[in-house]
Length: 142
Image (cartoon, rainbow, N blue to C red):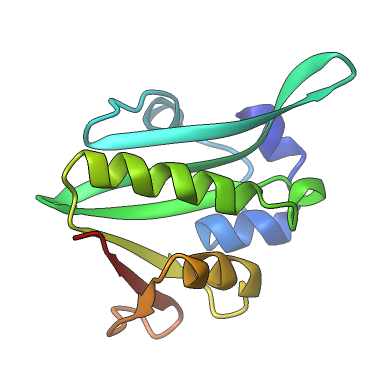
C-alpha cells in the first residue's frame, strides 16, 4: 500500500484524502491494513510489473451506521482511466448488497470528474451536502 502511495501524485492523493497525504500514523496504517470484511471491507487491484505484483488501486467501504457505509477509492495515476475504479466499484457494490447493506455514500471533490463518472455509472445520485466543498453522493442498494 505504501509503495502505491509513493507512485500516486499529490493531486490524486488530494482527490482521495482531500489533502496531499503521503505519510500515515500508526493508527491510520492499522486502519488501512486491517479491514474486518464485515464493517470495513477493502479490495486492491493488482497488476504485474517487472515480473512482480504491484497494487495499482484500492477501494473500501466502512459501515458508519446499520445498513449504510461510506465508500472511497484511489488509483495510481498511470492506471487511471483504464477501468480500475469501475472494477473495484462493481465488486464492492456486490459485496455490500450480499452483506445486506441498504445504502452506499461517497464524498467527492467537485473537480474529481473521473470519480464522479464512475459513481454515476453505478447510479449514485447527488444528495444534500454536509460540506459545501464536496459532492455528496448516495446509492440505494435495495
